[in-house]
Length: 208
Ligand code: SAH
Image: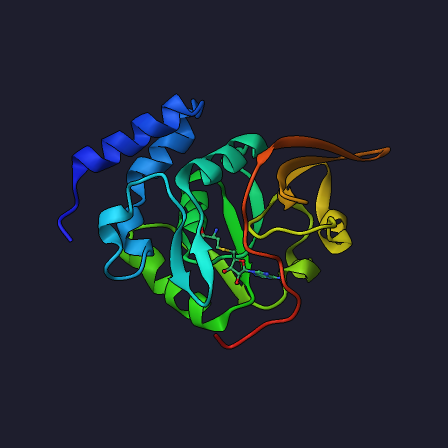
């Protein structure tokens, strides 16, 4: 596909008009070519603010949803971040532009096997990728400065809370709303951010 600079600028404008003002995050959206993360035939929709199917009944999240979740985490370039639900790898790619180390877990092997090559083609940094059940977290590299969960759940997975640094944040779609969770000395502080539609966080892992 011919990359269209005007479509990208329109997307950035749409993100700004939806309240995304963090220049580091907007810059990451400019530098990661989203059309490389959508299936063949859908490239013309890559710079619209829409979730799109990526196979295996999964979706690449809408840019404004990803941007809002990243904004809520208040990431610093020194952070080590755990992502649950790699999917297309687009958000993983953005994270490589924003933080020091990215750890990402995906339960669907056929989605995951495309991601590292896509990150290279997109000119992004590397991410540590793992196939498996993200609800268990990735204890070997814990604790994390931030955790981002890209699939919806009814309960906060306790393993993820355990693997978060004290004072740190997790964003997670919880009961149909994106929640920002802060791990405090007294326990968890939850703040509802917005309504959302996410594919469900499922246990175990699968080939396709
Ligand atoms: N951020 C991704 C979102 C993909 S959709 C993107 O924009 O492309 C959510 C993803 O979470 C799916 O790929 C799904 O397979 C994955 N997923 C669901 N439950 C999971 C679990 N327990 N562990 C890891 N990944 C999971």
